[in-house]
Amino acid sequence: MCMDFQDLGQLALVKILMKCTSHSNYEIADIPLYFWYQFCKELIQLEEKSIRDLKMAAYSSSLEELLIILVKAVQYPVDIDKLTEDQVESYKGHRYNMTDVIIDICGVIGSQYCLEIIVSLLEAQMHQDRNNWQMIEACLFASRSIAHLILPNNNNAVPKLLQIIPHLPENNRHLRHTANLVIGRYSHWLEQHAAVLGTMFQYLLNGFSVPECSASAAIGVKQVCHNCAKVLGEPTLSLYDHLQVIKIHIKFKDELEILDGLCSIVKALPVESAITSLHRIAIPIVDSLSKPQSTLSAQQDLDRLCILLRKSPSIIGKDGQHPSISLLNSMWTPLGQLINKWPENIEIAENICRCNKHAIKNAGKKMAEPLLLPMAERIIQVFALPPHHSSYIYCASVCVSVFGDNLEKDDTYADIISKLIAQLSQLVFHLFQSGLPIMQQYPDVVEEYFYMMERCIRNCPTLLVRFQLLENPLKLAVEGMMIQHREAHRGIMHFISETVALGTEGRSAKNFESVVKSLFQIQGEKVVKNIFVPILSRDYSKYTTDDKESNGSNLPESGISSMLWRLRRLSHSLLEKWIIEALGGEKSLSYPPNKIFIGTISSPNCSRD
Image 1: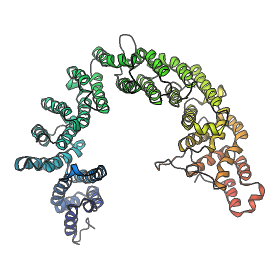
Image 2: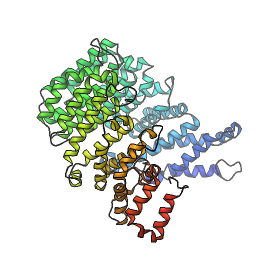
Image 3: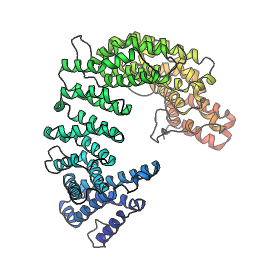
Image 4: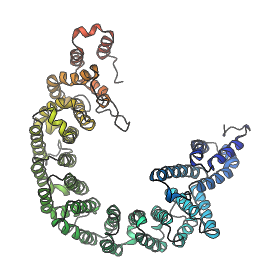
């Protein structure tokens, strides 16, 4: 209607909805927001320039007015500090809804122009009434929301915005919190305006003196370090020494944000300087891990180490090693001692496995090769002992992903990977020798093991066939199909479905078809029975028949319909036979729906849907 040429009172409608958007009750103000989204979208999509110019002439002033309304609408209420946590979260949701529309308006009248309007409002408020911090903060919040749309060559609005920040009213945590985040969001602009960078960075550092603002200051520091690493350079790493002093006054997650940012600076340094700086940062972490005081301190040091391994620069040092591999090698013995000291601690096990993952993924297959054998041996050694942490299987899965890829052309790592899979499988089979009841007690092990086996099928199927590593896992998977655990069940179904697909889909299917058929001649009937019997008896959990992930996304790999489709491609006659048996034999075909279903399966026109 609003894009119609005939005068139907469109402008009056726009004005009414603008009045609604400015309502003091934010739940009412949110009602027209979808209209504004569609309104801006239709304006942007007008292709003919003459028409677009006409509509812009009609509505541009209204959009400018709407922008001002939206900025005012994101003001915190006067009693913000008296609201409950739920009320604050609800109001924050309203603020983000409003800034979504501001972003939509930017698409119509231009982000640079929108920022100029917002900064003008901020300047006016600073001049007229600095005590009205809510409006000042609203302008900062609005400018932050469109930072990603602002180009680094903006030499008008952005300088004005950032110049105001050091002069904001002091002793207001809401203002400083948002200002910290604004600096971080505009760090891409600061990277090209070094003259302003120092002042902004110091403002962030001063923010750590306000406990409620240390989180936003840490985020701002990280973003500035990411985007301005080359400009900041090696002198900024002295912040790490400062961090050792102030970290007892800030939250641990804020410390990790700063450490992450400092690693970005390290990556931007010349090779030798980068390696020297990385080792200097690592020294207190390594020393602490060598003499852990508690499980908590060990977990925190492992989190710090994990960041260094993940963010270390992709360079080769004088020792010929990648920095992450060199660092992990130096920690190999202390990490083993941690496992022995606290074998039952799942957080320590998970953190150590994360360190291994990030080291080999960051270094890549070739540079991480020296770690493969000792890592495989440690995985087998520690998983064999109670409490059998599933994170070690995940670590093995990462090894399969990195070193098991392309083994058909290059089998350098075939022996190590095959032994790792075979030995880990034997441990899993031994653990689950009592069947489903014990599997029910270790659902995380079930999940990780079958996802690892699925990854093997995708990465190195020839290896599985050559060393006969599919038969027993498939047998265990069939037994575990009745497990009452969503993620474990999904892992099993993924594995079974991918095993079928190995002989039915892809260019290599012919190479594996006979092997897969022989496997399912033994297990196929049980697979189909385990699918149908719980459904027919109505004794099943919803997720066992759900073709979607828990988040609603399609899951073609493990959905029942997809699995049946793949089994049909493997052998429609066998599938028909298995389904009839699952339904109760030939006599079940006297029931019309069963007969129709079997007829559909047998039909040459049967589709995946």
